Length: 122
Image 1: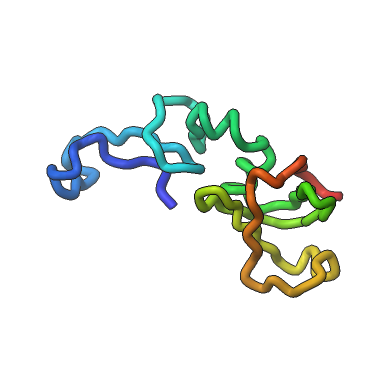
Image 2: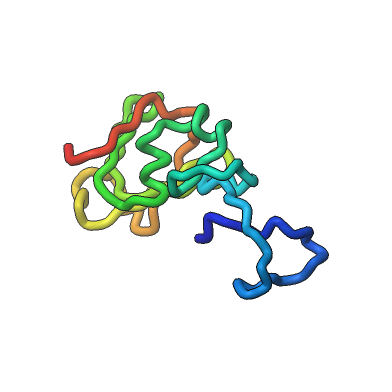
């Protein structure tokens, strides 16, 4: 998943790296254009306000994460991606006994139902 997109208009066609077209950074979570920043990946201010930092980190840095849903369920996961109003949580074999069902391809949770999230081994 690329974190930049051409700043040229969509009608300009594809720009190669040799064309000299400057690329503008886009938010790693939602894909909207962002201001130039030194840190990578870049998140727009709206996503930085809306999502917990550990959930944003899980989008680009597979590791140990967990979150609690409004119903009290605690889910441990290793990576995520944002799909509109949902976060798709992915797993590996780190937490095979943590889930009531296998969820072999991950599980989608409503972002509004996340109470807290954490980064690090638990």
